[in-house]
Structures are given as C-alpha cells and as structure tokens.
Length: 165
Image (cartoon, rainbow, N blue to C red; front, side):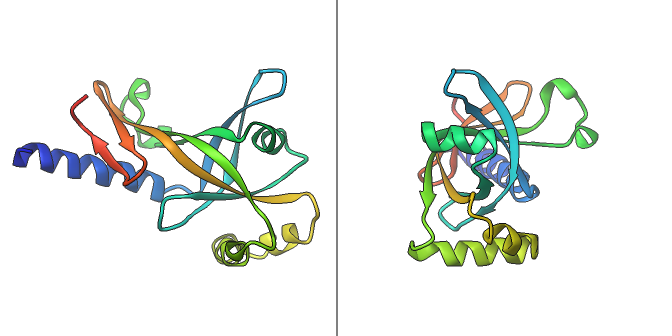
C-alpha cells in the first residue's frame, strides 16, 4: 500500500475511533415483533475487543426487540453544532449481534463495575431492579461516513477501514 494511502487510512481510522470515544451514549435501531422500526438510545461501555455493553430495562421496547431478535444497529454521529454541513454529518453505523450477559457469567461483575465507575451510583440502583439486563453488542458489519464521497467499510474483526471502496 502506498504511503499516502496508508496515511489516509490511519487518519480516517483515528477519526472514526475518536468519534466513538467522544460519545457516552449510542443510538439504537431495533425492529419490533410486528416488523416496525424503533429508535432509542442507551449509555454504553466498550471493552478492549470492541464489544459494546448496555444495561437496559426489559420494560423498554428496544430491550424486548433485542432479546427477541438478537440484533440491532447502532449509530454514533457528530453533533449538529460541530458539523459544517448537515447533509454530510460524520457518523459510524454498526450492525450488531446481541448476547445477554447473565449475572453468573464471569464478566458480568467486571462490566457492571466499569459501568458504575463511568455512570455513577444510578447503575447500582438499576442493578437492584429485576427487569434490567446487561447486553453485549458485537459489531459484525460497519460503515464510517466521514462526509460527502467518504464512506468506508469497517472490518469489525480488527477495526481497520477499507479505504479502497
């Protein structure tokens, strides 16, 4: 790969990773049993492998959808106030498979501790409620849109970009 292409790839990789790191919540897109789309959001943490974790109530439509369908799409998008052209907002879209982390699972305690450190004692209160579930969202496909004519596939195995599209 030519040096300029490698530098471009590195720059865009840093940009999309910074966009994700700058967010504390993710936008969720799920599908109901009736096939209707549903949008929502949730605070998240992320592990070293790139798996996103959310702690959500089964009373919420998005939780029911994810537990039933086992999939969701998540969105990270640059704020409108930081965007020069609203038709070309920088964003990352990831299609994810969903797995519930059970309280007896080895990583449950660790993930909840990290969540409590990030979001405070509200997490401890939510943990005491029986309807909350820790869900792991593993990206299986992704896109990074940096602007007009700048859309790249994300290799979710190693989080690199394909800039030759």
